[in-house]
Image (cartoon, rainbow, N blue to C red; front, side):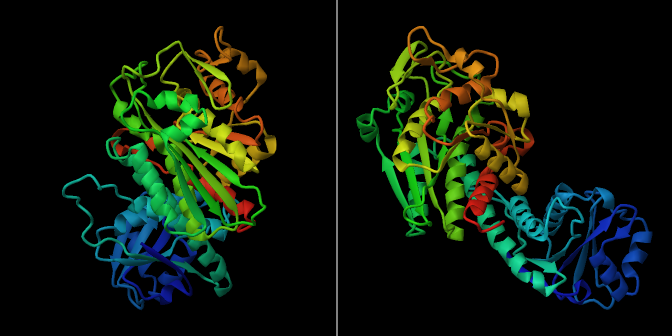
Length: 499
């Protein structure tokens, strides 16, 4: 879908459809008032008939308004004006896209109400509109033999601002929003693909394809023999049960000064997780194709960097493997040696994500990073603690944690910090190795992060557990593309593209 910005009076616009907001109890928004005045009270007259009250989720399509140039006017309910928030605005955008998709209006001008709170400025509101529009329009039908796409999909959205001095801000919001939306869609596509297609090799090839789009992005793929030479015993122990060879995907984006330390993003790329010998229950196991969503989000974020040509150095590292039961797979009680030299007793083979991540975190040291953020669908305990609304955050650096929390709030891709206290480290004690790979029933998300922290002592490091936020289950099953928005927001701010 194409997006652009325009300044002008809503009542004087010419388009197949003009989208206006109506608040609860039939209160017209400012843009709707302008159109109502031009049409000699036509909107007021229609609303008095009672077909729409302005409640959230309502929509009403009107045709041939007098004294206007648009073929249609779509009224969208925005709820109570005092309660109109960023979330309500995004709901209104989604409803408008839903109503327009498949209609004969393939272009639309959006004049939804401006937020009157400090929660969202013009830039944020317009960027949200682009991202939400893309999310509502997203379809995954790559694996269907006869995909039923809309016959007349919405092709163009114009975001209207009333003052020409805001056009520069509006265009910036659209540019950033499109890049983030594209990165989210890429992450969703990778996540939604089945494990027999999206293998470690497939992920590596997707990274290579992205690398061909920009001379600033260099791709390097380490094969198992190279990882053996680096003594990545933890990572390689996970892939032993699979016929698919493991890959370590390194994506180096050099948009900043040569001597500037990079931001390193490490994404768990477990393309299918059956649990290994500690096999998972069969109900819902199909969703374990989503265990690579951390890696997908890193690829999506690098895609946004490439599209925006961000002036910052970013390195994406994706350890990728499958975790399956096999005669050569890890067994409970096995002890492996990580790249760092630390030994790990594997008490549960289903706690494999931390095994591939720990070697990747050690590999990060060669880049002398400014910060390291790992992203992983790591623990079911995080779903229990936070549900699907917030990503779990744990960090060894307060300033970095605050930076991530701020980026999450600004991007509406929220995270919540959990403690990383030394008291939890004792749960990883092992009688036979330097540490165990699980810490017992209590505080599973925290002990998993404690495990990773032992391989990140040389970094300003944060861990994002996206087990609850990376995908939806049930009737709306599908990848969410999180936390591409959060990560891109952080990079936009670090590169001084936004304040």
